[in-house]
Image 1 (cartoon, one colour):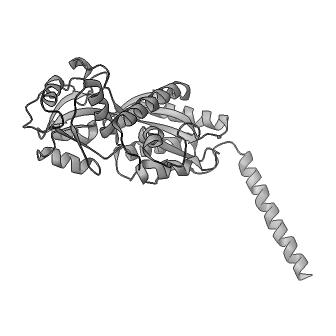
Image 2 (image 1 turned 135 degrees about the vertical axis):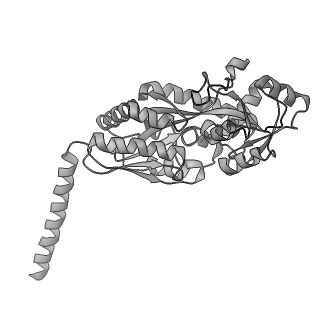
Image 3 (image 1 turned 30 degrees about the vertical axis):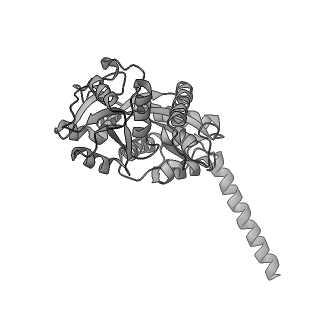
Length: 326
């Protein structure tokens, strides 16, 4: 009799839990916390942007949106976790050209497919790349850099934030387009690269604008060309590569929001519309652009062909430069 009563109680608890789960599922989306994964350490510009958007999403959706930093393997660990998450709209990722492009060709087993495993929610924009040189390098423009590099191929060195990083690939693209050769010196992140450049032990770098902006504004290095179609208002005196005759070497470290691919379309539409509206808010735009991020908000259908083109471009550069996969 005791066993029967215990069994009935257990069955009742299971039934109750099932009813609660069904009731929650029947409620309009979202009805509980949403997790936004940033596949990099906390504190960087990407993380700050994610937290700005997450805060606004919480207000607009009426549910908390928490940011979770899951770093490692060039962003692959956190991105992989989202690819394998339940496709219910409660786990999304703030990815970029590394996680949803380069990793497909740099890592032997990234553990996900950047196209097949994800549905784009919104393209956000990009960190532009800028060529900077040490102060005593006798060049003040991109044509002068090309001329100096061609005099003695490989003599000049260029620093990057790591093998396969945006700064590495952007410089490889530039060298391919201009026919020059410089020697690659990879670092573990922007901080040591900037230190060595200011000390004059690195000749050149094609870095993201925020990572070197304060240094060249303070005269600790020289900015000679922005790898972007137009000048940046944060550095209005720096001419673009295009202005200096190089029309096919623009490079940017873009960022975008993604959800697991099988997320229901109404949920995708809700997330997409919310994020796009947030990125277009004047106060949000002001906060994000101050970080050196150039907003270029795209809806999913506009972003998809851009993503495909980016993947193809960098796949070709990685292959041509023979960059080894990890």
